[in-house]
Length: 79
Image 1 (tube, rainbow, N blue to C red):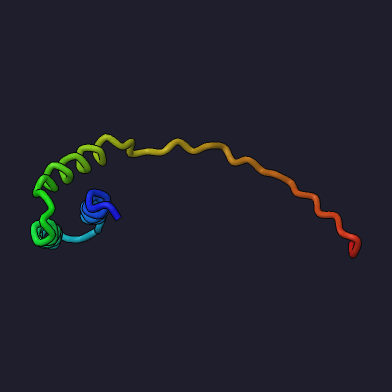
Image 2: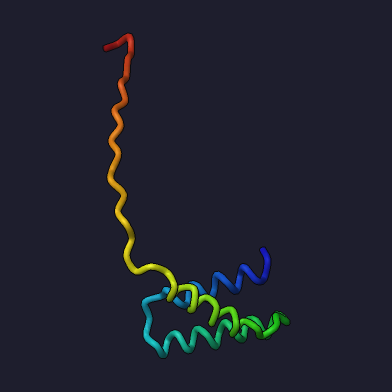
């Protein structure tokens, strides 16, 4: 797995977890430590900012599409 995608996943997870602000700060420190211990450049902070911006741009409401119903007819010799 690509390290960029790994840290992308870690940061996305951090942003969606329903945890306290203090717990998020602690989790962020852990992510930074993992990156540093594995020689990953610390531009992870840019990744976090990018994902936060992207999350804020998402629409808050979704448009409901009308439901489509389909009828399947089953024919069998036993019926």
